[in-house]
Image 1: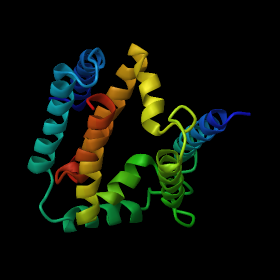
Image 2: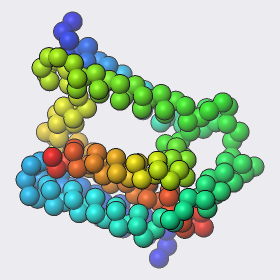
Image 3: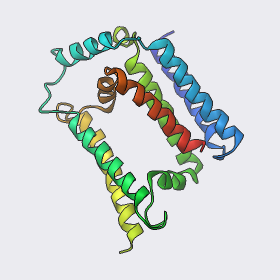
Image 4: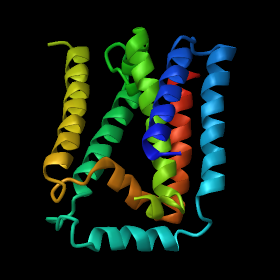
Length: 148
Length: 66
């Protein structure tokens, strides 16, 4: 199957699944089932597609960054992301542990709870989560180097 | 300014920073790595890749189910 057709089917499937999943309410069986099915699918894909050892994908990542077409990194291009994660975790922990009401100190979950009240935004959030999971699976896949 | 307003402003700033880094990763990939490249680096480490998958699974479960 052509890559374009496969991508279109994946996108349509992901959008459809997200539309259904976003219509469920947390702490109910449908929400558990639809979210759980996506979690199980990711676990299955990781088990099937990821190599047991990381040596090959490490070598592939090193050769990709050393290729002539890749731009030469200035300093550490991953450092800004690490900084963002540190700030995010620190702020989340502060809001979670500080004395006071959740309304005064909203955690990330409080923000997403507010987003979840809007069907379209919840659909986009679910779709983003699915896409992120697929990207993690794809990046660690043993066949990723042959397709790109 | 109330405490909650400050909290929301910081959350918004973190969101804007994430979007800014994402945009910059397309314009200046040698300065800020693309998110998928950052994931590509993380999955090369045996323990980190397991933590990444488990964390991502928990994240979705926490947001949408529990």
